[in-house]
Length: 193
Image (cartoon, rainbow, N blue to C red; front, side, top):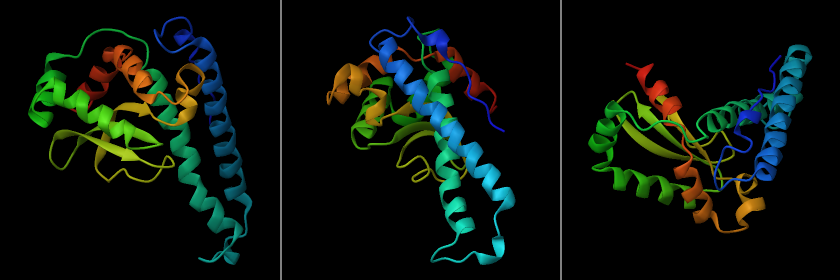
């Protein structure tokens, strides 16, 4: 069974994202954990012989499994990389320069990607090119190519910012950029080399 992780350390420690916003978001994340456990349990007991493309309990559980799974683990990555700490390492800065041309281009790419999706933006190490790349994801499971390692997750769903910013998503993105836990992001990158 999957368990809800505690991210209460973020409360009072994220400038521009209120505790009220964070607590609501934690509740949504807990819902994904609950749903993933429910799907996992049902998959153990469902009659697989009735499965087909049109409809079947097994088929539907399998179709929704990735949504709940990614809903859990993208949120965990997002909360982990929140809470301003440290600075981007020299290695990360160099990879961003090599991949995007400059730090400014990276931030512009990240923000432009974020306003282009109602879902997620992830900064990945593309294991095919060995460069950093941003991808837009929809409904937690659509839009991430294979051979990617996520080093930064940005939740762009309205539930991540509506309490604080209403429809002013750009203001949320500015707050997010000021609150990246670079120690976590650096560590994710370092584990890949």
